[in-house]
Figure (tube, rainbow, N blue to C red):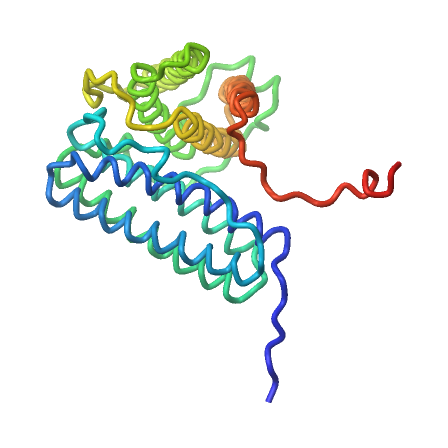
Length: 335
């Protein structure tokens, strides 16, 4: 009978578990706060189900790290959330939160699963990925039933299969009328709009409760950047006689009392900014209209610069938890 030899965690597995710990601890803080004020019973039940699972995730990661005698990350905890603070978001915004986070989790957990070799780590992330899919489906169904899910555009079905006749090169694209958007491009535009609308709501709320003026200006700059992206993407849709996606900014209350630490707020924006880089990178890889690829490249650079400045703010204040890294062999050797 063969016995399984226990193998330590690889750098990829540590990266996955460490990143998941940080994001799960963040999600617990947000979910605890949202559940306090969410009145809709169905949405509240879904949020509480999500909260319990994130708490279980944190225990699972802590168990693995403890067994490996590996330092458990600090992440975010009760010190980063004030449950006595008044509601900052109202309506069904917490349901939109579950929807958005489950989408991001699906992308993250699939990457973590395929980067792991150890069976227990793969099993862990596989299970989490399945749960994230369930949360996404439930949140989508609930948003549809309550009339708050904005569907992407409909187009007439094509009558036959067609193939491109021209190479999508610089000359052929620049010097002929722009062709209509294809479904890949429409899909990416819609979900980038959805993501930026969500970011505007977050940044609107956070900017009115933050006390640090430097961080406040950073958040307002992010809101301006998100609105710029919304304006550009809507204009592209309108040029093709497709309905733009407009947000009615009614999900933020007038509260100026912060329920979250400034460290947590910057952490949330850093995480959403990373998601923006991922989504824009995908959009850039699928777009074949040159005007789109050029503009996506510009937008991506702006988001990267914004993210870098946010990281600098975290580091300057001593709030940036450093990921585990390889030893500096040159320093150890004294060279």
